[in-house]
Image (cartoon, rainbow, N blue to C red; front, side, top):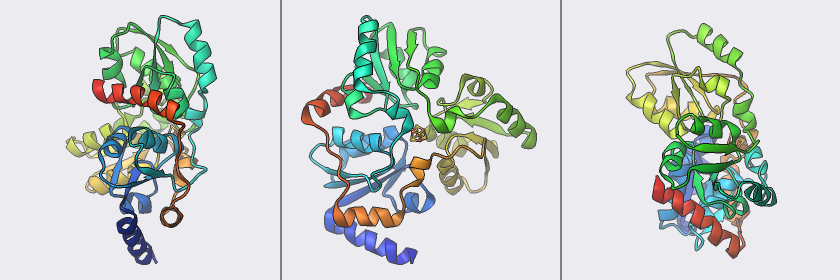
Length: 301
Ligand code: SF4
């Protein structure tokens, strides 16, 4: 069955001149079928550079939008139309405009986990992998940071600039508590604890390493250590085990599952390529403004 699906996918990819991009949080069969698996930053760079005519983005809506912003001449499809990001939904463009009036001297930085319409309101975009570097080097002393309060806090502890946080959070990372860290450390001693900066400060403070997903993969591969507790979404464990099979990985909390990232499967990828839907479309005026924000991220990182 899986072979039949993979054969069909291969035919469709050739026929449509398509490339399959999958985020690190996707389920195993989607990661295995993808041409590229990566974090938001890696995938946005691939989207910007690909020669393919069609980009199938296995992730959530804002990621496929970022691909479309950077590669407007390509057809971008998101196999599962319902795959949204609750964190991205916590910032609306009209609310960002209101806040900008409240803080007229602040530059506006947004996490890549925002809609195209929100990016269009912001000066510069960041991902968890490059946020500290970009905010540090961007020529402003004060930033309104949209929409993740925990990443905003993490940035503020690593740069000598004023960060005004938005009140948003990722439901998957924000729910983890200090007590869960204590329990995990006790249950699995002598391990390296890596957590994502979308976790609460009380969790981040106890981590050995605070990294985005790409950073965790690199660290685990290069480290002399062999046991890791992973404080990010479950899907990354699949890739960590695949890339470092001799090492052991434990999820920090059994609740670290993003339901939106689990909506896509191989059959849906095939269906979307057959029908070429759902296609991502962005009004051109918004796309052009949002591209300035994403281009600055590529420039400063
Ligand atoms: Fe959004 Fe969090 Fe899910 Fe990522 S893990 S898509 S930030 S809700």
